[in-house]
Length: 118
Image 1 (tube, rainbow, N blue to C red):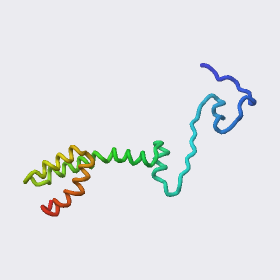
Image 2 (image 1 turned 60 degrees about the vertical axis):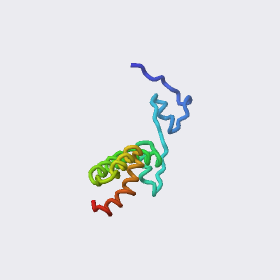
Image 3 (image 1 turned 90 degrees about the vertical axis):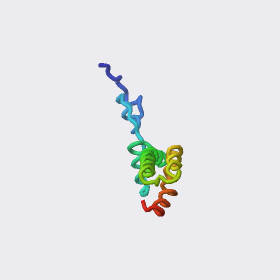
Image 4 (image 1 turned 180 degrees about the vertical axis):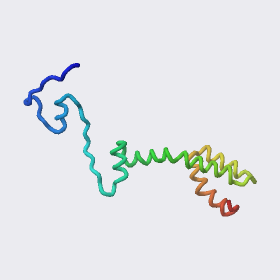
């Protein structure tokens, strides 16, 4: 097993960042300051090294398919079959993905509940 070379104390200026490098090991350090009102984003930064905007993107990626699937199932099960409303809303949900699902949940669903009661 190879050994590390002996170092003279005059060769290395000992600071907290390179004190570990003197033994031959590297250490990653980060100064993280947590603000009092910024608890959620700072925890995400500490554990995943992401900021608030990246956290929002991750949440949308995770929650988006759930919203899409819920609106698709709601449209299939509860939308009345008279006329072309069901087919049109299914096409909107499928082709516009999350935007179509949000449109269905905010525009069509309340009017359908008000008109048909389901």
